[in-house]
Amino acid sequence: MEARPRLCCLPGCGYSYPATAFMPDPVTSAATAAVPQSTDAEMLTGFWYRALRSDEVHARELTPATLLELPLVLGRTDSGQAFAMRDNCPHRGIPLSYGWFDGQDVQCSYHGWKFDACSAQCVEIPSLTAADRLDPRKIRAGHFACQERDGYLWVFVPDPGTGGEPGGPAPGLPTFSENYRRTHLWAELPSNVDHGIIGLMDPAHGPFVHSAWWWRQRESIHEKEKRFEPIPLGFRMSAHQPSKNSAPYKLLKWYAGAAEVTTTIDFVLPNLRYETIRAGKYWFTSLTTVTPITRRRCRIDVAAAWNVFRHVPLAMTIARHFGKRFVEQDRLTMGQRAEGPRHNPPLMLIDDADRPAKWYFELKKAWLESRRTGQPLRHPMTGPVTLRWRS
Image (cartoon, rainbow, N blue to C red; front, side, top):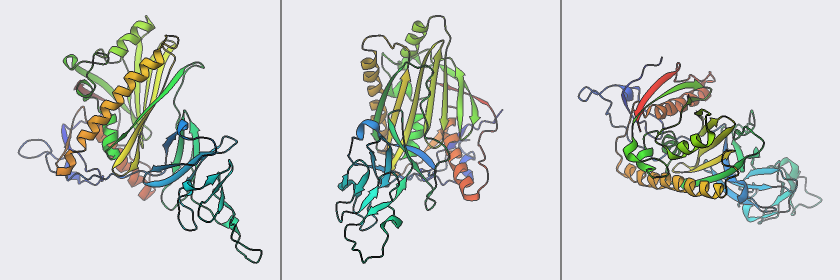
């Protein structure tokens, strides 16, 4: 079993902190060394990220987006192929999103240079004459691998200077039957990606941020015990019975009858949170991401699918109504939290409720070290561990 220190300081969001950050303070017997909080965060490359929702990209239109501070332009060809290019013409740098798209080629609005949308290869420079020796096809605009899955356009962001291609497909939302419903929720957060992600995995804020008759009440706080285990590039909250103080889970248990209800939650770098709820033949899954737009702004996206309550009238409308309120509560809280760093306060993480947040920071550091040295990632978890907290 993994040893569990009791209290530690929150690493600065720039993700650079001394080893002494985990040492106990001689006066308080807890780590209270002030770590200056940065408003920036290290953004991990070499991963797939959600760039836009599918319904934001229309036929023969160019849609700009920002991802990890990269200016992108996305679209979909007449054949249905999603594409992503750097939103700058390599000639004079004007955004290509100001140009035109005929379903196959993207044309710059400044000098009319044309680029194949799927390869970013230049196919025409109108100003060239027959005497010019320049071959347009040797010129490329910035190109990024792009896939459309589960209602999102995903873009692979390679390590700087590598132009690398992904080693596998974009992440997908797990489903367990042919017939199911699906929906999406989203919100921009005035926060760097680190604070967005540790808020995503924080188990203790629910009774305070999400206190409501339809979810759970503050008075229902009780002690919980959950088992965690390491998985590649992340960690898992092993299958367990859902919270007894949550109204939706109570309703699911009633709907499923005698079937046992279990929940499994995975977190995987750089920003993926999978939740799977099973109850006999019924299931609910979600894939939530917190995507860095800039170093100081991120976006939360939730894709959910389920076959439970599928034939109940207005089930989708009701689910989206309460889901949007849930996400809005998180957005408001993150906006309030963003006010604190203006005063550069020292921050801390406590066990056990904050242990997943510490694993995230340690995983992130291990990933960066692995990329720097070429050595295998050293996982911060040495084995399964049981955590306890009240929520």
